Length: 239
Image (cartoon, rainbow, N blue to C red; front, side, top):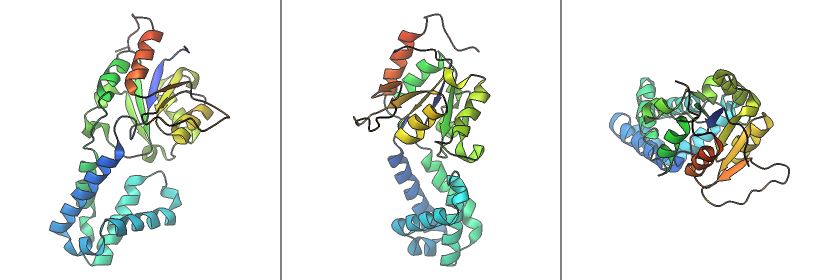
């Protein structure tokens, strides 16, 4: 299948890198921070207990469903207060967590493929998570990063896709959204009027009969190959 692509938006977690190892490192970094600065909090809130607390905070504040950073800050504040430690440690504790959360391990194909895609069309990221492309070192390949926290609404809401298209200056029908999540990325982008590409690294079967992605690959390299074959060799991203 071939169709016009004037810009590409990409999901981040589990599309460019696996999220689970990054979260494990972040939780370990938080443990280390608390062991040094708030040992009573660490003793009171081991990993499973603080994950349960995070779920409770999420349920209590549905208006923050799009803002993972604020949810975690509230969770840390409640942990410190309950343990009798200094609540002023909230920001430093979050920084310890977040710095490690941004120490991602890219899928082997991701960075080379991104470089190939960025040479062809403008790239932007649309993410419900709070990964920072500046810290991760990839922002130079993207025109911008749009997070749900910044936008005020999360995927699969059409508004976040439309906001990215507007910032790119490209009509939704000419934007290809790329992601691993069936509902958040493929269904959400399809319903917002974008073209869709499903990155299916683990060989899942497509589960829906009502719609399908325009493209599907088992790596980002597959998409880069498709784009190279689909666009004229002279086509390059405008400076």
